[in-house]
Image (cartoon, rainbow, N blue to C red; front, side, top):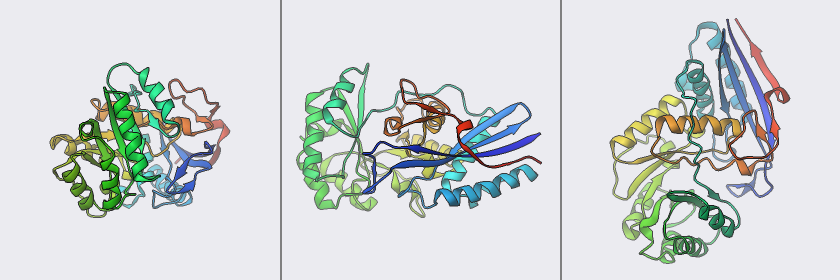
Length: 326
């Protein structure tokens, strides 16, 4: 007997969370739960404001229609779905079918979202290779360059992942690089999307020797992955990319080309982060995922994130917005 339930959650965010220059006060999303006799599969559907084309209301409406169709005949038209809906539903179905392993990769790259001194302290305690992520492009590029240079100078065994979200003009990107010691630049694992266009970002890499990674470019209309000089990685945010099938194809293409593939968060709840950690262990076991975002929340949801002491909200505390069985 098949059954489908759609829960809606709303979780408070840390007051300092800024997305595309606007404050994110709460995170709204859906948890889809599929049952087939004793088997259960769950997935998170959480469009990210400012990044997803669809709203949470649009995602909910589409999810309800899609679940009704699945209950009727088991069919899903994946090509017609919003990325967040496609990812959440495909994750739930994959778990229902036992496709996603239980083990997860919880060695998330720490994200510097506040005081740099806190990251230095956190990194000093990490065993093995030290990798961290810094968001750049929110302040003046000269400041960003000085901060990055400081980290690389203080911690000689540190490798940095940087994310600019296409915020720099070529002139500002050059200003950033001028403040990073050329001897340190090889320890920048990659800089995600420094400039507004892929061509400008590739030119930046050519001129500075700083490796880049695609993130937003993966979602550009008509995009196809190709080897490019200076491109070292792709950063896959499944909530923004689409179904698990789409994610797997991107990972396989990247690995075939010798590129690193990194599974990354779109600020999902602790429940969604657990799913992403399992997918990362399954599809990209050699790469540390970018999932260090649970500290941006005021609460966890249904599943704890290792080491997180935030209070827990369960699915029974959430609103059931849709439920049906044949």
